[in-house]
Length: 137
Image: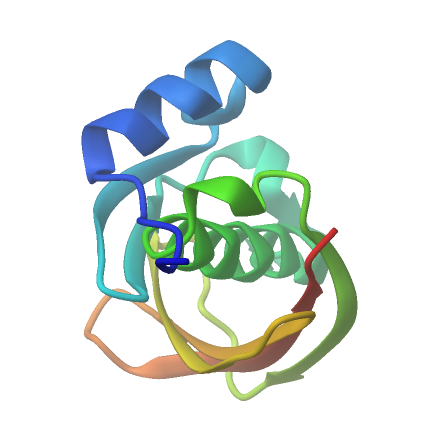
């Protein structure tokens, strides 16, 4: 039995459009393939917390979505996978600037998939780092 093939970027975009039609109003899928993904967040007022910086939940959404896209890039059958563990370290305030999330799968087992996400600020500085585990159905 061969391993499941992943979705190319355009298929992932189409999948998101069908299942979460408003997702692209928040995050742009820039790259995906071979267990990696890059998502971009154009920061708007709704993403800010008091103090005029991007909120933690917004960065968590970006990180979780980035790893999910990285997973879909290698396994089209993983659409029902769910986050089973999520750890994030907020390293510096990104301010009111757009963010980029770079995700990479570290280990892909039969039941669990582990990866890391680096969230970068305007000048490419690391503003948050997350490790995420997905459980396959």
